[in-house]
Each structure stands twice: as structure tokens, then as C-alpha cells.
Image (cartoon, rainbow, N blue to C red; front, side):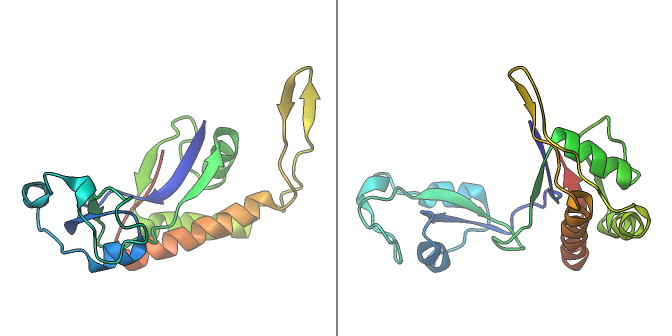
Length: 165
């Protein structure tokens, strides 16, 4: 199991009919609603060729959601135990591995944790029979807090909350 830190859900800005090829997505016509995209979806999707598709005749188009922020939404994935350690350092509830706070609040918590947390000495790996705990490298906490600071800064600029689950 793992926990992903990213931005909170924001309603789609539009919907497109496209495959996953970047050029096809860029050339796709945006529809204001999912219903409008459904109405325009071809009856024989395997027979159409999308402009910009890198694999014409082999891709199947899908109705894709366009996020107002684009495709570069940052995500940071941590194991459950590392996420608990990070949430503790941020002064957030580490028992419940899902939540959301404003980007400004999260950014402040990252700055405080980076200033106050002692250098992470890491944890050596341990094997007990077939069970292996891979440990944590030295400096891991500071590295992840720096990445979370970058995520929070992005969320502030986008006017979005930070969420994790």
C-alpha cells in the first residue's frame, strides 16, 4: 500500500475525444460537457484516424478529461510507513492516511518541518525470516519534505488544495 500526495480534485475544464498520443490530444476538439463528448463519440471508434495519432488505425479513442492545470500535475508517492513519518513531521494526523489542507497551510508546514526536523539518519534494512523491511536512506525525510514543498508551491500557484490518499 502507498499514499500519494497531489492536488485536490478540480472539476474538468473540458472533455476531448482522443487517444493517449500527445499530438492527438493537442489536436483534439474540446467539448464543454461529458454528454457533448459522448454524443460526438464515433459509433465505430476503431475505424477513425485521429489527427496527430502516432499509431493510426491501431489506437482506440477515449473520452479524456482536460484538467485546467494541464498534464503536469505533480504527485509524490510514499509507502504507508514513510507517509506516516512525513505526516507526523508536518503535524498532521498520521493515523488517517487521507486528507486535504489548503496549499498555504501545507507550504507553511513543509517550511517549519524543514527548519526543525533533525537530519534524517535513515534506517538500515532488516530481514526477519522472509519478511524484509527495506529501511530508509539517510536524508530521506529532508528530500521528501523538499519535494512536498515544491508540490505545495505548485498548488499555491494554481489556487488548489493539497490532498493525499
